[in-house]
Image (cartoon, rainbow, N blue to C red):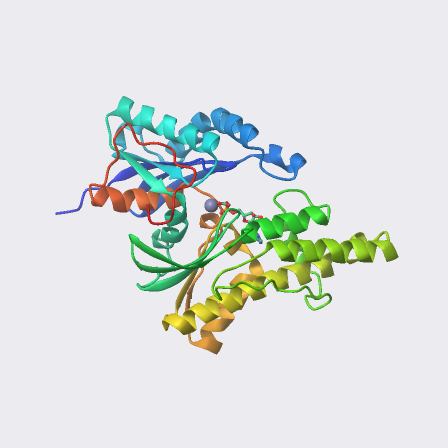
Length: 343
Ligand code: KG4
Ligand code: ZN
C-alpha cells in the first residue's frame, strides 16, 4: 500500500521577508519569497514598515505558492507558521493569518521555531543532496543569531557557543553601511570581495571569555576607526579600495567563524559540520568549509542558496516532522519574539 501524501502550507514572516511554501511530505512543491525592498533606504529593517509590508504581501504570496504547487487549498493537511524568534509585528501577521486559515479550512495548526527551521532545512529532500547524520554541529549564522549547536536528533539542540553582542549578519550589514552600501549589505560585501585582495588590510579579531562564544561589536568599531583614519589621508579611500576592503572584512569574519567551529569539532570530536542561516550563503564560508573535508576529514553540509536566507520551505519541513508526531497547536498559541532554540 502506498503511503498517503501530506500537503503542508507553511508561512514565514519573522523579519522582512514574506514567504509561503507548499510541501508534499519532505519535498518542496513551491517556495515563494517576497523581499521587502523598502528597508534599503533606511539602512536596516524598520519594524513597523515590515509589518505593514507583510499585511500587503501575505495573501498574494500564499495564493502564488498554492498555484505554483498545482494543488487546491482543499488538499492541505495542515498549516505551519513561524512562532518566533523575530519581530513581534511581523510574527503577528503570519500567526494571525495561519490561525484564521486553519479554522476556515478545519485543518491542524503547527507552530515552528524559526531557528530550528534554519537547521532542519538540511532535511528537505533534494536531488543530489544528502542530509547530515546525527550528531552534527551546526554553525547557525544569520542577521539575528550566531550559534554553534550540537544537534543530536530533530528535537534536541544544545548551544555550545553564541554571540555575546552583534550577530554575524549584523557585522556584515553594519560594515557594509560604513562603506555606504545599502541594506542588506552582506551579499554586496561578498560580491565585492570576489574581486579584492583578502589580505590587503588587517582587522583585530575580538576576544571572548568562553572560547566558543562570538563577539562582533568590537570589529565594527575597529573598521569604523580604520576607515576614518584612511579617509583623513585620502577622501576617496573607500571608493578606490572597495573590493580590497570588502575582501579583508569578509576574510576576518569568516576566519572568526572557522576558528570557532574548528575548536568545537575538536572539543566534541564531531566531524559532521553543517551551516545554516542567511550568512551561510556567503561564498568564502562555503568554499573554506568545503576545503576542510580534505584537510580536516570533515563531512560538510551546505544548504542550497534558497534555503539559507529566510524562506517558508524550512518552516514546512519542521511542520512535516511535527505533523508526523501529532504535535499540533491550539488556537491560543502566540507569536513569541524571544523564543529560544529548544522551545
Ligand atoms: O537568515 P536570514 O535571511 O534572516 C535572519 O533570520 O536574520 O539572514 C539575513 C542575513 C543578513 O544579515 C544578510 O546580510 C546576510 O544574512 N547574508 C549574507 C550573505 N547573504 C545574506 N552575509 C554574507 N554573505 C552573503 N552572501
Ligand atoms: Zn532567519
